[in-house]
Length: 273
Image (cartoon, rainbow, N blue to C red; front, side):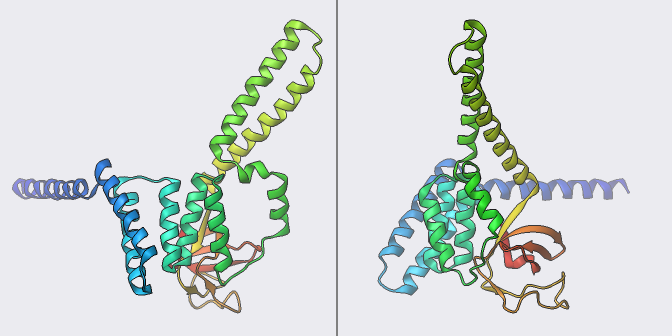
């Protein structure tokens, strides 16, 4: 009995060792990731210069595999990498994954004008042009800093505003009635609270709220989590349609579209940002 247990133990150790070895082999070093990234960029440029569509698509696909390998095996996840990946998907004709990666790039660098410009263009090409609720459009205009500035920028502004507010109050305390110090401190306090609340809202959303994009060419949305449920809409949803995730069940996602309508879709038809 002891010998059997010992054999099982050694087998488990051996399997774990093999898995660990293969994992180490699969991981890219920084220098290897740099080489793969530059090779992917070269493939992307060649695809842009290709004379026939089939060759271009093949080169874009190879570039995509390179970019995704850097993300997956080197653990590098930045806005520029997702932006390049999105461009390759867009030119290849995969609108769903293009918008998905533009959204991921935007989440990492929301103030980048190139990302926003290409994302807007990609959205204009999708089949489902679902209108955004008026309430959300109003919020985006009223709280523009929350949607236009990166988290890092808002955090820095909050810290600077708080420091200047403290300085203004100190001047008021030590030198008495100095013109405009209380008004200045009040304005800086409002800026501090607005930016800090914005950063907090982003952190809450990051932890509790998830958004996604349909990557399948088309998918039938249902009124429940199964193919036996009736169709939620008259037409299928198509690649590039964005949504907020409401609930997850085995094999199915409950989603909310930009216009507030909800439905269920197979989880394999979409990806989360």
